[in-house]
Each structure stands twice: as C-alpha cells, then as structure tokens.
Length: 555
Image (cartoon, rainbow, N blue to C red; front, side, top):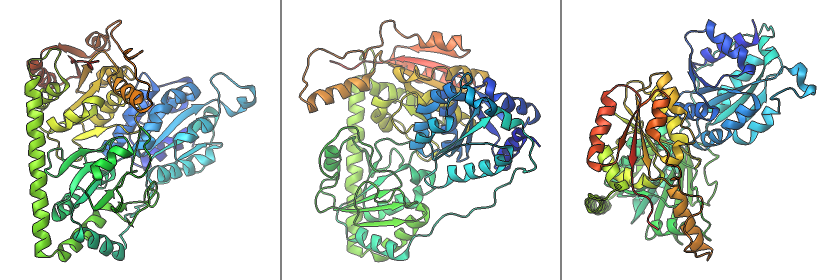
C-alpha cells in the first residue's frame, strides 16, 4: 500500500469525506487518489484562503474535523491568515500541503520552504511525514490533537515521494472516546452558594456554550438567579438567543468600557470562552473592585488564563451547568427566588426599551438614501426564510443585526474569530456544505468581501444556493471608527479626514463580479425593495449576490 492510499484510508476511517482545497503540482498524488475514492467530496476553491475559511466554518457548523489540502509554500502562505482565524475559533481541522520530493531538499527546488516552520505559529501541531510508515500514526495523532480541547488546526506536510512510498502500516480507525469531565462537586457547591447570595449577577457567554450543547441549562441558570447576559466581543456561535429578555449585548473591546458594563454587579460568571479579546489598552482590571469573578470552562487551559478568579470550575459545560442549576434551585430561599424574578422582569423591561429604541431608530432613518445600516438589517430579517443560517461579517452593522434578527439556537448564526476579515464569503461555503438542507444568508461588508470574492466561483461550481448580501458603503467603515478612537486616545486630533479608507475610486461592481463567476446578481438601492430581493434570491434555489447600497460614515 502506498502512502497516499494510507492517507485516504485514514481520513475515511476517521469519518472525513469532504476535502477543501486548491490544486497544485505537489498535490498530484493527493488529487490523483481522488479518482479511486469517489465517496470523498472535493470542494475546489480558487484561492487557498477561501478553501481554509470554508473548512473552518464547516468544522464549526458540523462539529466534524475539516480537511484542507493546500499547495506547497506559497499556498500555505496564502492561507496563514485564515489558519489564524481557525485557531482563534477552535476549529478542529487537519491542514495538509504537498511538499517537494525529499531527495531534492538540498537543491532548494521551486516552491520549496520549511512548511512545518511556516505553519507552527498558527497551529496546535505542525509536522512533516518523513516516511510512508509514519503516515497512519501521524494522521491518527493529528485527528486526536485537532480535537483535544481547546480544539484547533493541525498541519501535516506531505512530500510527493513519501506519498508514493510503499508501506505495510495501514490506516487505524479511532476508538470511542468519552472525554466529558464531570465537575468537582465541591466546586459546584461553592459556585451555587455564590450565585444564590448574589444581588446582581452577570453572566458572560462564550462560544463553547453553543458548541457544548449547554444553552438550555445556561439559560435556565441565568433565569433562576436573575442574571443579566452578555456575549463575547467577537463570537463565532449563538450562545444566547438574540431576543432573550436577559440579553444586554456584546462586550466592548477595551477594559474601561467592560468595567462600565460590569458596574454594580456583585458576581460575574464567565463561561466557555477566552475572555477577553481587546483592541485598545486601558489600565486596570475589567472587573470593579469587590466583584466576585467566577469561571466555568471545559478545559484547564482557558480557566483563569488572563484574570485571577475567586472561583473556577473545570467540567463539561452542560454537566456543570446542570449540576449548578440543581444546587441553586435547592439553595434559593422563597425570598431570594422572588428577588431573582424581579431582576428578570427588570431585564425584560430594559430589553423592551432597547427594542423600542431600535424601532425608533429605524423609523427615523426610513426615508434616508442611501439606506441606513439599521434599516437594511431590518429589511433583510423580514425577507429571511424559516430555518435559515446567518453567516455574519457585517462588522460595524453587527449590533443592528443582533437587534433585528430573531436567532434562536446554535446553527442559526456563524461568524469568524480572530478579527481577520474575509472570513464571511468563504465561511458561507462551509456552512452550506455542513447544512445542505438549510438556507444560508451571508452578510458581508464590501471591504471584507474583496478578501475572498473568489468564493462566488466555488458557490457556482458546486451549486451551493447561498444568498450573499454585500453591504456596500464604499469604505472601510470600521477603520474610520477606529481612527477616531485612536486620535482621541493619543491626542492626535485631526480634521483631515480618513486616509486610504475609501473604496469609491473606482466603485466596486459586485453584481458584475458575481456574474463573471457564474452567480446571479441584483443591485438594491431602495430599502423597501430589499426584503423582496432576499426572498426572490432564496426562491431561485441558486447562489445569488445582492449588492445593497448603504450610507457611509458621516465625517
């Protein structure tokens, strides 16, 4: 058996039957093997970053280990940014790249480089298969490391001669692994005691709540103690339904503003995330003096990583939250239960006020042209079919999206982690492949879309019925906001505008670009036409792009 056969058999043995890639010469053994493994689906991308981004979202949506095949040093280099995003998103994946024949190593052949060193900083493990005898053991270990919590990408370099070597060591199927740790009963009891005594508890939800199937006990616990809910600043999943009455919003990007969000709360419970991703430095702790900070994590690595805790518990999130909920319910006095329900009613009133304010904001901008972001999000939500998945890279419109869309459960929402742009269009491919029976709406800004616009070709090539909405304000709006913040923070006040942040010369024609890659397109300039445009796009059953002209940032 040749090395390439062992590779393919190992992937199948571990349940992988989809490969995302961009072909190249050093990948010839891999690609040639596909002819013998017709049960493996190859998703072809025109750029390695698109293949990687699609694979990352596929892993997030499906819960399976994604497989990517890249093209030697330049191809791996093209994908490094997306691998970074996958690492931040904890996407379990095996990233492979063809490598030149090892017998050419000292001659520095075309496209050669140290692939292992290139990938190491953005992966959990980076390795090259040196002999065909190593193929099966390395792939088995790669699957293990990629899925060990916190999950993440692993890189494997595949030299062309090793792929053609003979070996007697065949693929090994994984056993059934039961790795969900039960929480320490003493830790659960201590946490429950803190929550029962809390006067104003606050919970911060991370992506692992959604990934770990822990939303039900999480929300039940929050309601039992009357906790206000916040979500991570950057999130890839829906861990709190967008219309839940206790939800206050997503945390800001700096310590000082976080401290304001946490003010007057005596207990802050962090659950299932890295906590926190900041952009701007502010001195001190995000937690006000005297606040009890507790944390629940499914792995030791994230527990107390950035901030000291009063109390920390490691355990499977669903099991830990269920156990804590039972202990809290047993410990609450009737008076404490009444106080918790009063907090829930107050939070519902705040949520209703927020909804009324959003409706007033939309009404105020109803006749504005170009349309406002708030109105655009409201109209898209009206046109969304039942059961849809929203892949979000709206960035500065994210708050309007959260307030306008009624997203209820994990799988309804996916977004990128790490802050690198261009993940949306690529990620929508992976989401649609993971959820073939669900409508997928991808929302992206125009600047972000240009990082992975080739994803449109892949959608057409594989007939993926994604509706891409490009919100075109002809600018890098988020950079303008950040430049304002920079100028204020560093005393660099200026009235000279925003250098190199406008995209209007020439104007990007997304409808034309889409048609050039086999995707139908529509241009929407009137807010009243947007909901119908979204409905028609989904009804077509084909990939479709809607370019929506929205207002830019007012100077």
